[in-house]
Amino acid sequence: MDKMGEKQIALQALEDAFSGCGDFTLRRAAFGLNDALELPVCWLDGTVSGSAVSLEILRPLTELLRAAKVADEGEALRRIEAGMVYRCGVTRRETLKDAAEDLCRGCCVILFEGQGIALSFEIRSEQRRSVAEPTLEKSLKGGKDSFTETLRVNTALVRQRLATPELKLAESTVGRRSRTTVALLYMEGIASPDLVRETARRLDAMDLDALLAVGPLEEALADAPLSPFPQLLHTERPDRFAMHLADGRVGLLIDGLPVGLVLPCTLAEFMKVTGDSSMHFLVASALSALRWLALLVGAYLPALYTAVAMYHQEMIPTRLLLSIIEAEQDVPFSSALEVLGMLAAFSLLQEAGLRMPNPIGDTVSIIGALIVGQAAVEAKVVSPIAIIVVAASGIACYTLPSQDLGFAVRLSRLALFLGAAFAGLYGVGLVSCLLLLHLADLDSFGVDYTAPLSSGRPGGAARLLLRLPRFWDKWRDPLLRPLDRRRQK
Image (tube, rainbow, N blue to C red; front, side, top):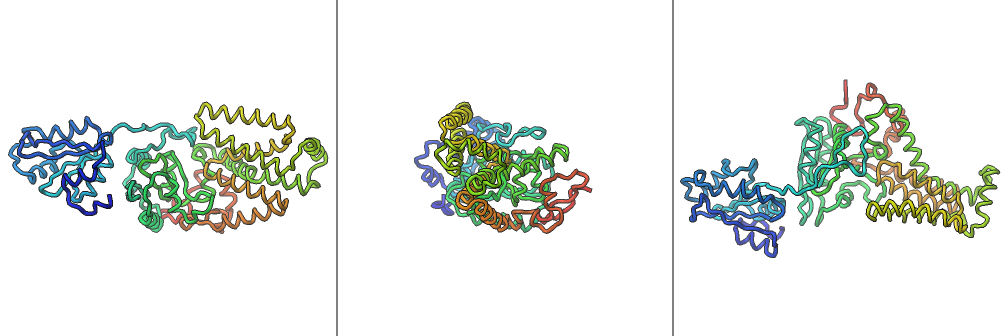
């Protein structure tokens, strides 16, 4: 595309640009069946609807009554732009690069070589994945639809929930060769203008060859791309996406990817689920506290067991210590090697379950864990207590709402375990301090990653764990600097 520069529109130049492309289709339409005036009509087969091209483009061009008394391209161009073609939208293109990009995006292009102009009509193929239920974020009382790979379908799903002209949508193109459309959505009058401008600036500053996955976009937008902790919230649910926009955040939708990105985000946002807003505030608060407990168990349980079993046996009650000694006396490995081996085995089973087809993956995960674990205990390779500790830690990580946060917790668990293996509880304390310093140093578009604990406002821990009743929760988060701070009267 870049080689085309600002070349004038010509049929030969367009054919040269798409040489070697078997899906490039050219049809010369005699305007009003007048052989003296032929208009080249181009499209890429498969990206457009063939029936729509025939009925809405070619048929009107060849009708005698509509094309009466047209002798030159200028008059034909005027009539087509005035509504001769049965299509709701038309775009005038004056450079070869723009016309070629429209063809790649599912448009049908009519060339007017004498005028150096092309008219582009969007007629995308209807062969696309329909809206289905979310696969990763289960919905109990909320909507049952999820984002698809089509950008316009995704924006329509959001507008269905925020039916107001205050929902603004700005589009930009990312990727020198992929030319991927990225839509920036925000609520005018609520979202901070500085946040919107900063997000748009970072999008425009991206220099990518192709944007085909979320990873490159997230690395370019994140304040600390080297950190394993996620800094942009991923969601496949339009209702959750719309909730964050109504709170004053900014959302991103990428053409070709069935996921929405929300920013700025804090660690607390990754621990929330959409279903909390549909439950009684006491139930939602209890579940929120349980998820935070699961976060601590998933990260610290293997490290604490290793530290106590190897260096601080005096902390274990006598009866429990005798039970552990009895289970460990026939095992030839230390507690650290046991836990490390079981963590590796658990991760391998998890990856096998994710990568294999669904029916086989579920079977491998369940049967593999049962058979391998039981065989390891009977062979006295590992002790039952080590299996219990690793399994409890793994199950706790599964309760986390965000899969990206789960991966970060698994890495943190490994770092804490290594600290425990080398220095006991002192090593756990040292690694914990380093993790806290790292989290405290993170920012997401000017918002502290550890907010509301680090916001300086009283009751930060309570707001972190509890969900207030609606009649008390009247204000939007001040850390987002919303223009309209009041959520309800």
